[in-house]
Amino acid sequence: MIRTSPCLAATLALAVLASTSFAPDARASGGALTQFEGMPVVQADASGAAGNLRATADCSSTEMRKAAVTLEWSVAQPKGSQQRVLVSVYGFREGRFEASEPLAPDQSTLAWSRVKGQANHSWMVLTLQGGSWRASAVESFTGPSCVADMHTAPQR
Image (cartoon, rainbow, N blue to C red; front, top):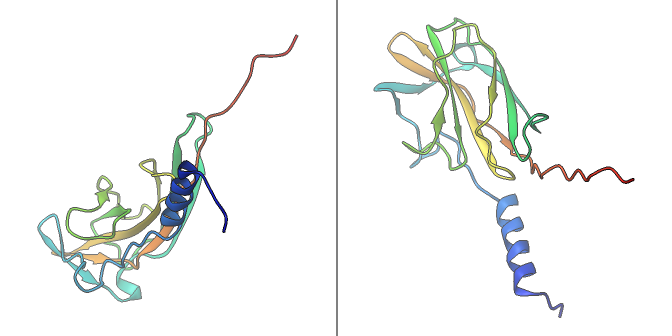
């Protein structure tokens, strides 16, 4: 039997929990995103929604302990009248996500700075076409751990 301090045991438990966080797909039963801004959200086929979602998460080069992610996608064809990016660490139950500002119909990248370190984030792109939002597939990324830069005074 290996003995550990209570502090170390709690730290290990949190690390395991963070590495196994669960964010259900937005279209899963019981947690489906069915409306956004008063309009229906529909599952679109590959040609009616944004696709090829990619995320690149990294620590900020200008702010200590600050993470950011660059989200990229292929614009839906046909293009809609606007797009929104939704990000969640909880899944896409109503009210359990954050939304970007309205994006131009041809925009295909977004810098997202509201990143939680070591948390699994789910994200999707909604495209407004007619009177409904077309949902992309849901992708995920893990927020990086950004520690403080430990500079010391120069030695003399």
